[in-house]
Length: 260
Image 1: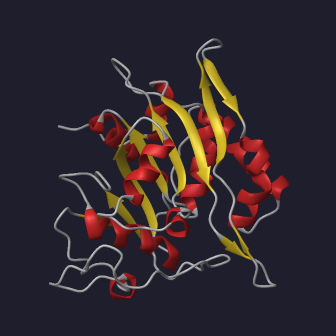
Image 2: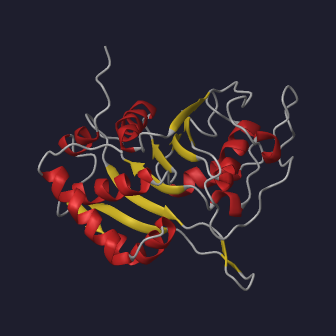
């Protein structure tokens, strides 16, 4: 029998530290997309499974299968999906750049092997990425050893996403190929394309939230550099985000309960 998902296991196994897990907890409660990239699919799936309890209790998890017809994803047609008739790569209409897309859907898409042969690939992968623009959350795994591997897979012509669509991936966690347990060696925040009140489009490169320091055998924290952006995404003040992250990190260090 498979062990039940448990976010604290990520700490016990040294996958990440309380500060990063606390930040992920806050972001996942807001249904921020999280993609786990790693060379070992089973390890990546285990990490995602352990993150699921951090989603808000009311969030409906929608499992997307490799042969999914998106019947459980209202709005899939506006993302380029035509039931029973696969659109060609690049088909349909992208939702386009938006300043701060309002959550129009309560679902969180659970995808195993996004843009991967044998997983949710091709046109289906494109629909999944486009769904982020209309408010869907995402918990997905992808093969690779760096953020660029994920972005390149989604840029491949067989998938056909554009840069603005890929900018909505949220947090990308990169795992190593540990012999026993994989560790998060880099956590990235993929900044979403934004439109200011004057109609100007802003595109920024991904930011690093943290990296594993092999010399110190600990994580280097860089999330402080994007706290204002993350707080803006959450609709709270930066100081409130920092305080809540610290509170939850202390709770995690003390073994307190988690969950939305």
